[in-house]
Image (cartoon, rainbow, N blue to C red; front, side):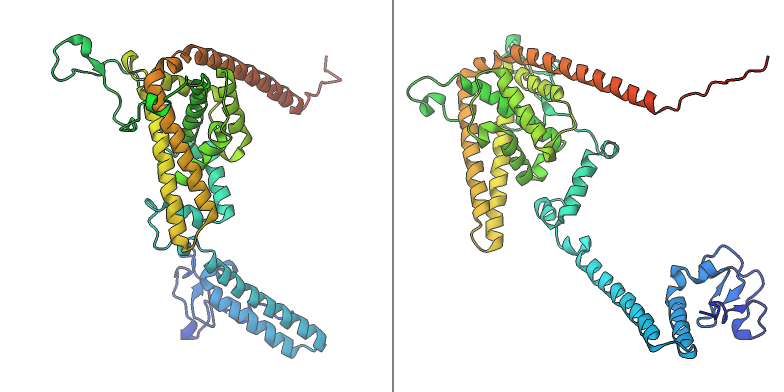
Length: 411
């Protein structure tokens, strides 16, 4: 268009009092530079064309440009087809702006989370998030830089402080002194049915001890994955344990320590959404801590606490399933099926807890084999890291530009 966009802009020297700018007056838009011009529409003083087109002056400048374009179209002799094309273009721009505003309101996270308690309604908050928001949050959790913003959770099973001693009431004999466990150890299930009442005839299968190892490994993996906050998302945490633990999901039984551990490792690696940043050797080390207990006299305390904590997690997940069915106002087949699965998991954990009270020596005896497995896995990880570092070093050497040698040197 022929006319300049600044044709109606008045300079500071304009003698009209309505457009007069005082000497050394700052720009009303950026508040940094000295004002040189005055807008003829709103009388605001500004310093440059950039400020004139800025967001602070958008309402005035955009309407000015639009009127200017329409005036030019009226005064310029153009074909009706060209005029209609420009009008259609302006109309489309206006409709796009309106549509963007509507969509932004519909997708507003603040609107979707309105009325929810972010601390107590964590499951409902998670359901309100879109698929893209959930993926973004999970990627953020796996980001190493984001890890520095979170306080690293110290597992309760890593405490083996033998200096914490208390005396049993009613006895002055020092041989009855026991080591007190940390305060954050989960409460052990009360009123556990004796194992001889659950299994009145026959002998228990030797695979129970190996199955317990598989369950405990999956437990420490999920608790570590949620940084000790697994109760904040009971549905997701319980579902994670169910997915990676073949003892729960497929009612599978194991015959060796190696099979029980490596099966859990393979399941954890296979499900990318639950893949932990910790190496498998670190999780096997957690398993050793559970098998050790707070002291020698109470070497099964941590095992019972882990099984009880997992039992409580499935209980909370079942409550969430019932709440979801009640909230929907109709029978939800998926929620009911999940509730039945978690109930079966609870019963299996009660069976293991009862078995542990009578046959705990069988499980504790596997501690040496678990230690051997930990050394083997740690050694294999070290070899893989060495190979990885060598490959990265070779790639870096290949990418470096070759140094140019001088073909002619001055004597």
